[in-house]
Amino acid sequence: MPRKFFRKYLPSHASIRENRTIARFGSWLKHHNLWHLHRRSVAGGIAAGMFAGLIPGSNPVQFTAAALLAAAFRVNLPIAVIVTLYSNPFTIVPLYYLAFKLGQLALLESNGELPPLAFSLEGKGFSEWLPAALDWLTSVGKPLLVGLPLLALLLSAISYVMVRWAWRCYVVYAWRARRRRRLATGTPPQ
Image (cartoon, rainbow, N blue to C red; front, side):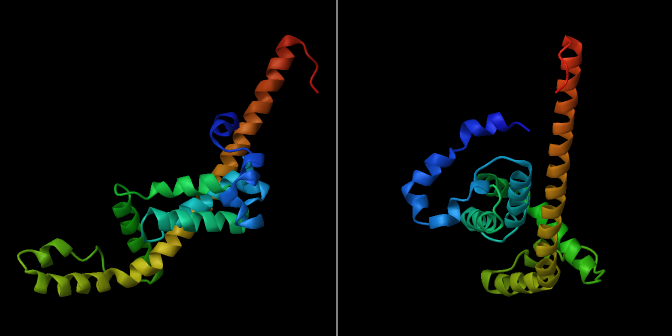
């Protein structure tokens, strides 16, 4: 994988160890896997970020959750935090809809689509709007509550496997290319 590209932007292990802010956390943030780029650490960091990205709340909540997951599982922390940005204002509606449908599937409900919110709130004052919005939220609550963790686990598992597989394919391709170059130049393989 493009390790050289990422190494330009990631801090060195020595600079991390010497940082005052990180020193307060003791050994929690000093583990080498939190900052190194290798197949297991990167794949785990992406999986942690995918899981934390679906935690309801703003970016600081998701960043903190990703950092805690990365520290707990000893996977790449910067990648885990950055990957949480996949859930943004453009993608959150499709992700939550997918989580809702997954929750319906898990609960064996076949109510069809999301209850329409816009039509039930149209032309109502705030005193009528708030109970209607709460009623709508409770109607989608249970499938969404079940679907969000399921989708987070599913996205984490798929991303972990895909990154490990892609990394392996890249390494095998690089080995074969290096071997072809050596054979073409007449250098004996090592």
